[in-house]
Length: 256
Image 1 (cartoon, rainbow, N blue to C red):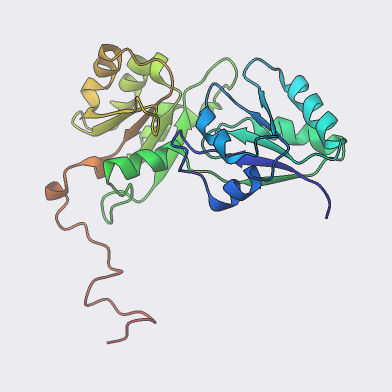
Image 2: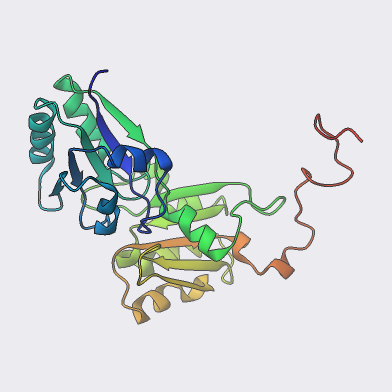
């Protein structure tokens, strides 16, 4: 079989929140390049003792790709380990593009995203029938990743959907102002810091307290905000029931 470079989502921080496929790939790896500022070293316990592990937080894109190219042509099994899920803010596009130009094939293994892990810790479903049925995943504009004009936060907030806001702690005051243009002031906000790590913090506050609480706890990095009416206490969600399991709802698996 042709050798491929595996890009693997390591999840948000909990070493147990990786897929079985990711585990099986890691345990046969020869070389693992991991984003050490975001991926806990505990995940490397799944690798063979002889595996070479390379930290990449200090490397440029070109240096990372050069290392992968070198190891690939040595016939080694390479894993590029990213935090969270590869489909969100993982910067894999440019890596895979450069590797493709070198004729090096890649295979992607999805991971658990921080918003999924946070929802699980909160014990909530982010889509409640008749209340909210859309989840928006976004971030604020930064020097490395500018936001298109049509995706500005206030525009997305106008949908009043469940909104998962990444990489925004340093701009939280401005974000709160943008969100309050459309969400009611008492909309629950889950402030989720380092989800899945030993020092995890998850705090639910009204939207009006989002910025103040962030500053009180000194949160500047690794913070996700979930803004959603679905975070209301269960006793406030009466009447919002899925038809799927309703006794009067008929479908092909339950006709009587």
